[in-house]
Length: 152
Image 1 (spheres, rainbow, N blue to C red):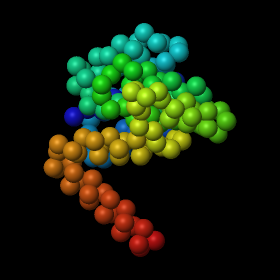
Image 2 (cartoon, rainbow, N blue to C red):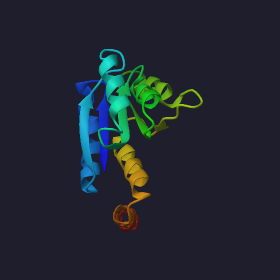
Image 3 (cartoon, rainbow, N blue to C red):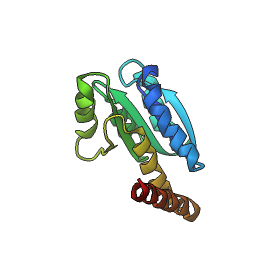
């Protein structure tokens, strides 16, 4: 099981690396790339088109401003795509709207602005559908969240 983490710019790394850290916590392999829907469209399209053949099961795409990266990934891949709108301008509202407003037929699951951790957890949930061990680890994680909340 491998998850692709793509971001539109190297400046997105501080937020998006949190997705990789969470995936690592669950023992899920990830690979991170900087690909821009606007500055490197050929590379972004090629990556998305070949993602499944390259062993990826889910794509997490983070971008700010116009935030078209997740949409490009979804348009060129049949894999589940999780969009992470990033705070680059307008407190991230522009990227949230760009990520969530996909046309009918090309869905992108969208998490909160700068929500890379939740994107990783959603990817884990998707992968856990066919993996009882991963399902148990996810259940244990949520039980610990509940215990921490009640203790706090």
